[in-house]
Amino acid sequence: MVTSCLLLTACLGRPARVSDPRLNADATSVTLTIASNAIAGGKNAAIAKWLTDYVIPHFVEQQRARGVTVRLKFQGSGAGDGAYQQKQILQLRTGGGGDILDIDGTDVGNFAQSYLIKPLAEVVGAETVANWDGWSQIYPSVRQLDRFHGQDYGIPKGTDGRVLFYNRDLFARAGLPTDWQPHSWDDILTAATALAKLPGITPIQLAGGTAMAETTTINGFLPLLAGAGALIFADGKWQGDTAAMRAALGFYQQIFTRRLTDPNFDLEAQGRDRSFAEFAAGRIGIYPESDYMWRSILSPTVGADPMPNRDSAVGYALIPAMRPGAGVNGVDHLTFSGGAVWLINPNTAYPQQAWSLLTFMSSAPAMEAYERDYLGSSQIMPRTDVNNALLAREPLMNYIAANALPHTYFRPSEGAYTRVSALIQQATADVIGGRTPDAAAAAYSRKLADLVGRDNVVDN
Image 1 (cartoon, helix red, strand yellow):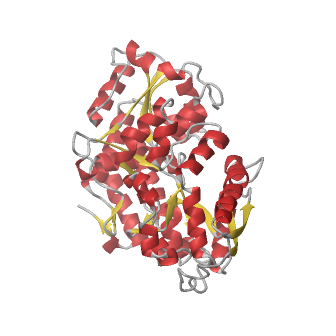
Image 2 (spheres, helix red, strand yellow):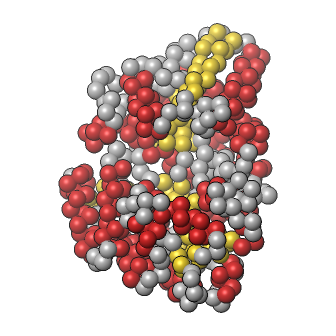
Image 3 (cartoon, rainbow, N blue to C red):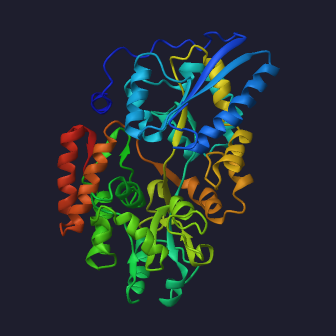
């Protein structure tokens, strides 16, 4: 909790009050507020419009039919993420804030350890939570997003997945299969080596170093670490100088020493944006990224770097383990995901009614309406029934939902994660700069022990 409170500057003060799940449970006139960093015509406008035009009127009508008068308000904002988070912390600490609110999944642990939020079972009752029929439709792997220390704190709001994008035209020119699916890291290196023979082509773009910031960790390093059989945080301990850590750094070493990538992408402040443009222009062969690249960068209609022939020229494959069966829990392929979570404020005066609102927002009809009528593009949702209904005509999204999400992992929501991630980025930078994986892993582990305590680090 000390580490968490160092990150959350509003940790001073009392914990949230003792929860009473039956508080005002029989009230027939209630007031509820949904708070989100979204605003009409601005930041996250689709969420704002969905909440005001769909959720509020439909939920009010649903409750009216049940004999309950609900005054439901939306409390929007268009603030920067950091400023908005600090506002949330202050409100929760002082007993305020929306009855329903959303936070990033990586913050669940921070907020929980700082007594800002509570498990749903404490807020609305364990039996009530367990009996929600929606749990059966949420991918078991995606429930990692809302859980901390084995307890559900909310319901996932949305998610994504990472794959290996590749240029089919370049693969054909290099004599590689255009329906490529690597089964090991060696398969990736073999393909990249073949692509290196094409003039003017960068074989692979692997996010590394400090300039790429969190992109290095979640798009590059963590999938490699999991592919070598370890998660960065498990069983209460952080990965230090382990065989899996050295293997992941060793893959970086092979990519960079064999000159299979352009190191400038990882060194420049705008390197990620420039690498997107290079992939769209057909000058990068393999690119590990999330579905964000497909829908927001390469989209022929709304992409930042539109690729008119995206659907025919760009292939995608699952990220392989170091070798078959070497991944976490013996998996052959895996991915990493991100996403946000809808929560119930433990300070709410109407916990049962807030639960009704939360489950209404997380229902299949509500999620389908959001994606179909408000979002304007396809997005991977946490519910299998919604994805089955809406992604059939979106091959990449459907591919990730069907093949990658069952084997996805999430960054730990421990308070120390942000600073551990910075150490990871530096370790990859050290290897890119010429340090050996063994030396980089040892230096990383020493700094990690200083940060979280030697007893909380696994070395082998």
